[in-house]
Length: 300
Image (cartoon, rainbow, N blue to C red):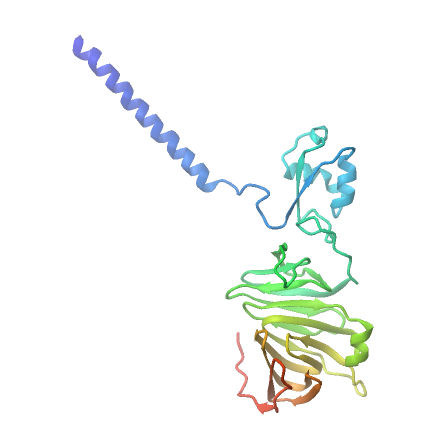
């Protein structure tokens, strides 16, 4: 009898230990497979509700479609609109927010409308509408296939990534290779006058990286440039051409013409580059005399 009384507590202790191990195991599984906490993404804007704010007023000011106010509540896990009071912090994600409002809450001036479309993406490709080369905080979002791009939109490709965009008005196709940062520039009247480019053309600012472009052939008697690439050291004016532009850093630009013709300008001098030739521009210097390119290697 005494032995049974001694064994009973040992049995319970073993049972308690087993239950503790099971509970801990489930806790660890929940930690590993738990969804990321909402609001930690780069493209989420935090808005603190002010006095006299209403849900309809907030939806009209910040949401792409004010009718998505229910989605906003769902995202913030708020069951009732009456729970939104002064001081409440609302998380407004990019997929609900107006395109003219950045993740930091800054209002971006609307641009002139769709300029290009994202045709193909491989790996990590992102776009931003508030990036600045000065290094100020910016919001980057995943660039999806068939997404519309506008003037002043930045695109960056990560390690081993690539992207293809198509300019909607003239059909110019641009391939962006890995570790490339570029921006679609607005065509101003000054650029049209300076570079004889018509309004259906496109301009890319290549901050760094490598791109290849195919520009539709020009029409007979049309001397306007259909496409331009601006780098830290050069301006590449293109008509009907297949070309590449490489900018490894702020001091060097390499340009090659596979088909057609193009012109490269720097330091007040312009060099014509025929098919099969290329030129190099070093900061503070004019473009070099065009030299013959090696045979083009087609990448799959």
